[in-house]
Length: 221
Image 1: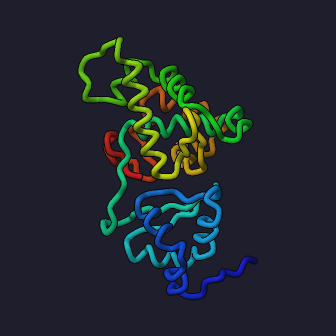
Image 2 (image 1 turned 45 degrees about the vertical axis):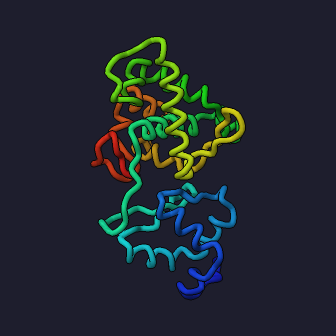
Image 3 (image 1 turned 180 degrees about the vertical axis):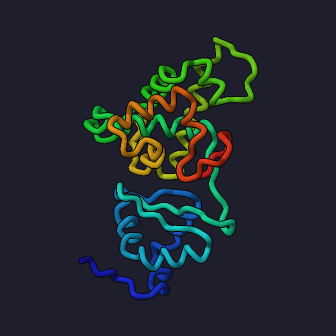
């Protein structure tokens, strides 16, 4: 059994990694195995950090898939709210993460693949409404550009939360935390098919990771 290097909370707080990890967790970021020493730090200090964050009305969650995140259970710490676009793109990235072709590619995909998959599942007109609900008129000339712009904006937001890494060009590296977006289909025989159905029906936007009661436009993470 692994013995922690930390015996007191003071030792955890004094470690040089603590301020960076603490700020990241409080901002809603997910820390996974790909974060190397940061993930190892949280794992090593887990029992002490669980008590520490509980005092702030948060639970430090360690998902069985291999990532940590803070889940506010009270009103002491604010939530990072996801936009409807971030929710929709996040669900689609989770779908891609589950697909064998992405696994074979080492979790790497392209922004163009995300755009194409969303358009095929939702339909271009409905996608415009979901990503930019304030746009009242559908203009064929700007539709594709609007979709790409809003998806790029959503990807930047998801990157800040540790769900995806934006790499050179249009390349994306999908991260373990995306599996939070697939919680609604956990345990099903064909989770990818079930998630595709939710996205197509618009239910993906209405459901949020860990908080199903928020409005679609501002979904709590």
